[in-house]
Structures are given as structure tokens and as C-alpha cells.
Length: 299
Image 1 (cartoon, one colour):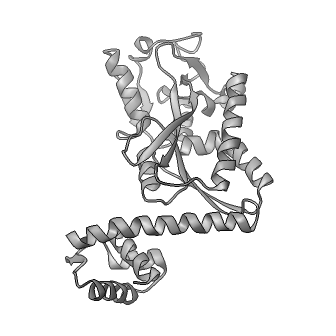
Image 2 (cartoon, rainbow, N blue to C red; image 1 turned 90 degrees about the vertical axis):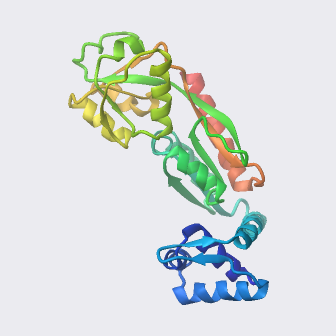
Image 3 (tube, one colour; image 1 turned 120 degrees about the vertical axis):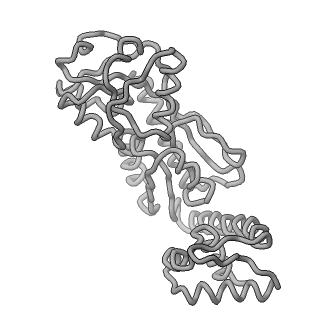
């Protein structure tokens, strides 16, 4: 077996399409087909069931994938560690994170990290928290930073920061003069929220359900920035992390009111249990923890 054949096999197993696997590896479809045929000939087993629109692993293919996936992940870790030996914290760092964390928490940390370790190539991949979990499982990132809870037997999670969600509303809204509000007071007003299925939406639905209150969803929006703009022009109110609205609050464009009966949102580190943390990842997380500790003191 050759490494290129194993990489082609894993890509096809993930993508379930010869064309997509070829595109992922910057190869041609015939090249992927030859790699798979060579593996099947060597093993004497069919590894994929071919269908018109997709391919699927056979039982033999499933067994091979479990082992090859772990082998390739170990090789990537070895390459990263060797690169770190060649040059202080050289190499590559990939972080999976949500839009909110990427926009409002990470910029200053990334600036400091790039200043201290310019040789490290940093790759930030932002997505929904549930998809960040899959990135971690697929070894596409060194670790994830996402809203908890996220649970999977192959990953560990560790709370690195707790942030408060607050109500935002136009400055002339009836709730804007309140020093603090409750979910009972918020419930009658139309809410601008993240789409169903997101971790943030799930936490909000749980809080209203536990309070035995209806949640009046006026609109589903996929970005905090869009939510803030729509609230500003009077299309509804919303509940977002306080860290996301400091500029608007300071400029008087939005009212930001603490919510007394809403628990803090937990931001967590998500890692594969079997993955060894690289030197670059360790240095980044040290900066992250120092930054959030300072923020907690300031609060």
C-alpha cells in the first residue's frame, strides 16, 4: 500500500464521489480510480459499492477506513511536531470556531500569536458549533472552539470562557430603559434568532421552555452582524453575547440590557481524545486563556 493510495481511499470514503475526491486532492478522476483498484487488487476485496450517484464503503472498506484514518491522522501529527523541532513553533495551526467567537473574541489573540510566532501558518475555519465537532472528528483542525454543550465519545471538552447573553433592542424600545429584564418581560416581543438546529438557538429554546414561556420568533438570521442591524432598524429584539455589541452600545445605536434568569453561555475547547496537542496549539491556547482571564477580571 502506498500513502497516496490511502489518501485517495479516505477522500473517496468521505466525499462518496470520485469527482469530489479528485477535486479535494487536486487529482483526476482516473487517478483516484486507479488508486482504489490497486488497493482492491492488493487486498482481494471490494472496498466500495458503486451506485449511479454515489459510492459507499463495503464492510471491508469500513474496516480499512477505521485504520487508515487513524494512520493518516498520526502522520499529520508527526509532521507538525517535526516542523516544530525544525523551527520554534513552525508549521501549521488549524482552528475550527464559530462566527461569533471568530469575530468578537479571537482577533486580538490571533494578532498576538502572529506577532510572537510569525513562522506558524494559521488557518481559521469558521462554521456552526455542530459542524466544528465534525471538523475535530475528521482531524481537519487541531482543535475547535465552540458553544457548549457538545458531546461525543471521541472528543473532550473544556470550558475556557463563560460569556453573558444580553437583550438588545432599539434605544426607543419600551425595554430600553430597564436596568435588567427577565424572560417574562422579553417573551411578548418578536425575536430575531439564529436558525433552528444551531447550538445558540437550542440554548435559547431550552431557557424559554424551562420558564414555561412562548418564544415569539419573528425571523431566523444566520449572523450576529445581521441580527444587530435588523434590531437597530426596529425589526425586532434579540438575545446575543454581550461581547458582540460593545461598539453599538458605546455609540448609542443599541440598548443592551442584562437578563436576570438566563445562565451564562459556555465557550469550550473541543479536542479529539487521541490527538496529541502540537506546540503551536499549546502556545495559542495559552494566549487564549490569558486573554479571557483578563476579560473576566475587567467584567
